[in-house]
Length: 574
Image (cartoon, rainbow, N blue to C red):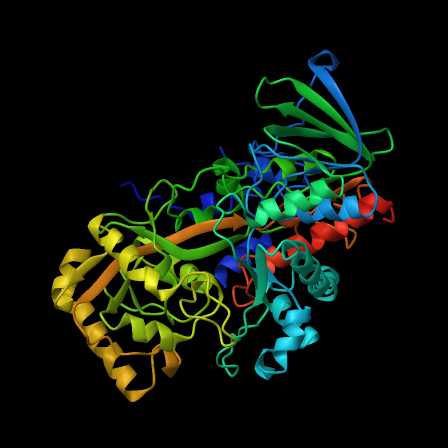
């Protein structure tokens, strides 16, 4: 496998890299030319506020020119929502509930399941449950101060206020919809662990739990069918081409293409267009331009589908501009074989177990971080290691160890404190790990020296690291990285297991900047009327890292903002 090397020059080349991006590195539906201090031509070029670069990058280009004669179908609606998943479905339902004639458009052939960890503050379930679990009560101001720190001050506090003020009602609203037929219930996940830790967890997550065996019923079908009950319409296998604007710059509709016979469609939207196409995680060119540092730790996991930045580009062609720093939700859930290292061109396997805070060592057999830090922090530390890859090591006592870890979020393997089920159960792990072992990813050995040989790391160094780690666990103190005693557990029950680990991309979460009415803002900070962006098409929240200890925050803000955009578009209140 060829390891990708990133020089300082190539690192600063991305269209989304500014001084703040370089500083940060210090601390669904070819790269652009950025600021290069050594390039005199770049220094004299005009600055494009939309992209934070000196020229329009190749991933953006210009809006397609579609001839009138090629548009063979015209539709008229009050509201058009492009992207019918996590943000789009709440937007469609909200618009319909507020009296609009609404059409949902998506390039998928049918509705896809939305994300199912919904982060919120002050839902009914949360307020009721906090009486029995007072540690899980949330002080809004303290929580939002924490989110501002996660974003290095880049987040718009006003947008965070919208999420905090409206997300509880959003969850109550979604709960009423999905429980109406008895197919689902909603669970609040109570648990915050040790609140004395510097990186504390927040009990924000709510997850729908399916109560029936019918495979045709999903979280997505429940929302779609309710939307249709109240008059919303959907059009599938239809791709966004661009938005249309009138002479005043107001967005008046969209041009789409039918993916079956390739004819073009004009869809007029008298009240507004809502873009919720899901970011750009499947757009390699855009990823390399806006966040090349994440490409060096990325391992490709074949998942099917993907989001190509269509909504972001469409908004930017209307005058919107993007966040200054490319950001993604990163999970250390990807495995490569012992002969491989991470990199955007490498294909690997899903390794759900990788987020457990067992001993993690670099390819020299040395520890390099506190293994219990949030997912993204561990991966950021891995960027600084040889091959941007590390090794997870655990022993045969992992059932007891993972219970003692008391992890939070979707990596948790045991029920929550209030009995709510985790996303994955510990009972699923033996079969999953055995499959990885059978396929050459997970290695098993009776001694640490033998495990080191199988993982292609220096045996002497790994043995010394392992011995030191076990000594720290016995003493209850980690003098190297200050890992908390609860998660500092000796590995002394053979056989031992190991796996080379890197980054799995869930989603990009930088988008076009928006105001509190979900309008993209132009170069002057003014709203683009008639256009709304939500979910991973929108920005103003994240910078460089995802706050993984706010469980479900990305999904929660996407649904909350989608519901808000639907109401505002339908009523034309803003």
